[in-house]
Length: 122
Image (cartoon, rainbow, N blue to C red; front, side, top):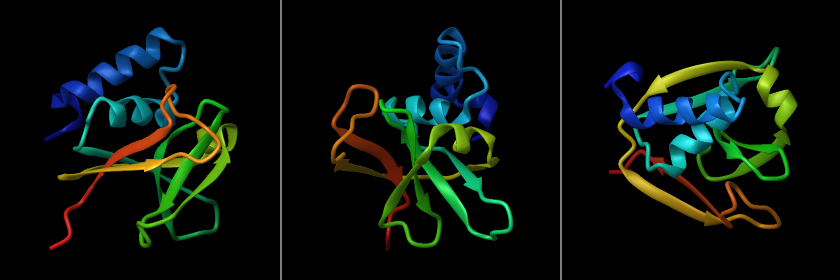
């Protein structure tokens, strides 16, 4: 699947644009994750680091949750303005397993659960 053929991705971009956030890829992937999108991952990279971090979503208190690509079991919060400015990497995947976790002390799109898809472990 390509980005242009993913109906959920295109819908998330359309909604974000209507809300004035059409260039905020972290917000777009938040919408996409909550639409059960499971083909596209957005990653950020920090200057002078080789690691990439998967964007899990933007919280309602305007922070962004990211997960180190190599660890896949813990996430951390960064300022959403910082996340907006970081370099983005877009990848297509076949994420098959839905993952949900309680958000402690915050919400995302009004929900108390973090929701996204992960690659199945064999």
